[in-house]
Image (cartoon, rainbow, N blue to C red):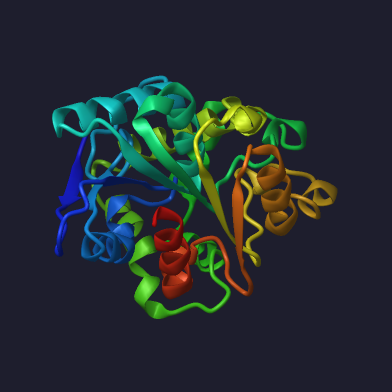
Length: 276
């Protein structure tokens, strides 16, 4: 399990922040928030979960419980007893499970455009693993770049690296292993919803929601009618904030799935205000 750590660049406040990445991402895209948190005195820990980034990509049954356990063991290895847990996209689902399994280790919880604010099983049919694997292998670099562009309202070429990594992997002998772990983690997201656990969260929680986001895992497999209502983040964010006890909601207008890239100042301001 690979990770990177950023120590405080200013006077330490003695607190740690854990940044959890999404499914089509890896830890390095947290660079901006990691620098801001470090400057504010936080120790920042950014793992690549198994199956992602620089971590191993085993052919196993992936689970949010397993990811949470691995993450807790990483904190143990680093001598961190308690941390603020920040999760984006799939990392938001993991952050919910971590806070549920380890409330005593979760100082605060921050969910940035988390997927799983709706139960995809209700509207998207189950897809066989072999079809998911084949679809990963057959997706072209151009199609994947177009997919990544849809995460943003105002695209900037500086974000092309989010697609370039996959394009490079596709040229290597490791691509089948990467594609299979991607298919397996799709099934994890689909089969292991956390939406129904939101009322059970027992730590202070902040939701940061880009209002132009319409992301839904497996949307390509949904019916034309279902696609019209999937991924309505303004409505999903408000419903989640109502269900999480005492949750605070920050809505960022005109921003897509990744506020910490597309609206970095607004995201960091909301995050740091909550942590203070």
